[in-house]
Image (tube, rainbow, N blue to C red; front, side, top):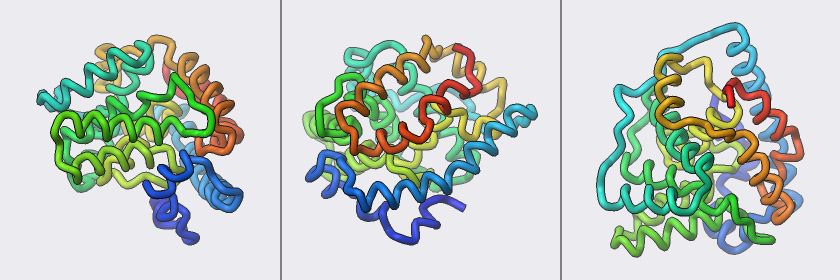
Length: 256
């Protein structure tokens, strides 16, 4: 069961772009309490992944190759990520794209526009390493992506799809792999915490990690998260962070 299906109080619908742009991603007390309830719901899934990993469970989720949509828009997004992000965060962006796509294929989710998914993956953390007080990195990343796609002449509905996907990807309960937000959330969740690692083809995982190495990613993302939480103490990342986020990252099944 997806968390989206157990969000009986409707907080996920409430945290849309209008909310994000108006508040900068700052949660009200009521919103924080509702998201905390969803966090309790997702913990068994995290624990199940860790137990299955320890038991050596392996799945078959993979892609046939490590290609990407080689278009002017995709190349522009890759360039922006490469020139802005630290090497560790840049490689995380690639892994997020591949992991999200592989799990979407494994789950037989409805197809997402691959070009837009790639662009969103490249830019989803574009603002994480440069925090701004009171304005969530996912909201600022969404704004940056909207600007970039508009400069490239993309249609408003395509701009909106990437913008909303980036803005929503850190909202607890976003897990639908037929959406950009779900692809980002699931792909990043695997890379950050090992979530759903037992579903993956281990040889393919090794290939991805050889092509896009981690480069001490755990230390880099923890440092960035600490700064972001200090800048936006009432944001979505801060809510997750205070419930053991660092420990989940540190115990993810990846060698650094």
